[in-house]
Length: 311
Image (tube, rainbow, N blue to C red):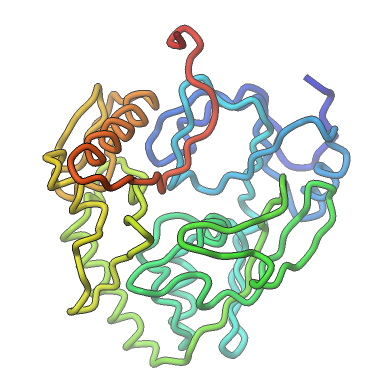
């Protein structure tokens, strides 16, 4: 492995990633870098040999790290990247700020970003995934993202350059999102908080929020998404096609498709990454055989399987 640059933050070799993901699975990264601040991140990326791959990681809410780990430097912004400020209807948030915290702080100031309240994870991942809920998406509110490029340069990318689409964006290779600026409409703080309380109650009634999951496993077919509206159609929801294929509660090793919401992949306590990804692939195959619908992963899968399992 190349010699890595000096840092002011924390640089840890052979760092197990299982403790850093919501599903609690995954092997080690060659290195985990937790930068002290933006300048530390810039200097590190500038001086890091170009042939060393990097993988930006948030709070690991939408991620399966395979059991063999990741041959890369995982960059995980933490303290120093979680600030939230509100000026008028503009909300600026660091990449490590939790989506729920941003929604709450915006509501305190009378700015409506309530759709973020029930989205698991942090702002960096929300931007990269164009996260959305209740018919609103990051793309509807994002003005620009602050990004450190692989060269170490700090740039501001307007939303038009991010090519935000259903659960996706296009960022330069090796770039790390460090913050974002949003625009929200004005609202009464009490009414905004009341709406978020209702959203949380609805989520907790229908989703396995007390289990180890990574949020929705598969994208809704053809990009259809639940809006929560009374006239919302349910014929192209991932959970429904999984349920109709008889896979609610399906298991593989310690992995299970949640009996409560079959588009949630659960680590019941003993699952490996191979169990979770294997069950997901089995569901994709059986849904396709049952309905001809091809499900696409919403959870990101990275890294290598354990070599002894190959072949």
